[in-house]
Length: 69
Image (cartoon, rainbow, N blue to C red):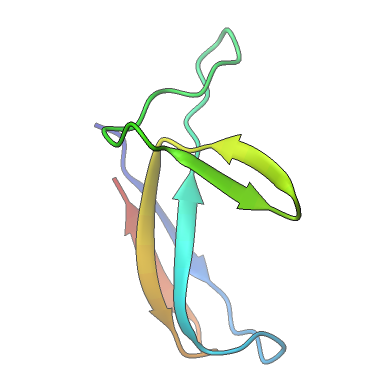
């Protein structure tokens, strides 16, 4: 299991509310390590990607500590 912790900084430009955080763990050969969810795909700016884990965060435009496993 991999644990990644970080702080989402204060951001007054974005809307507050539920946000989805995606984490990608990349192997030495460049492939994304698989998620337990077989539907581990997301879209961002029209580009589809693969994630290893995701977490929902209720972001209220203030700094918040987040960990993704």
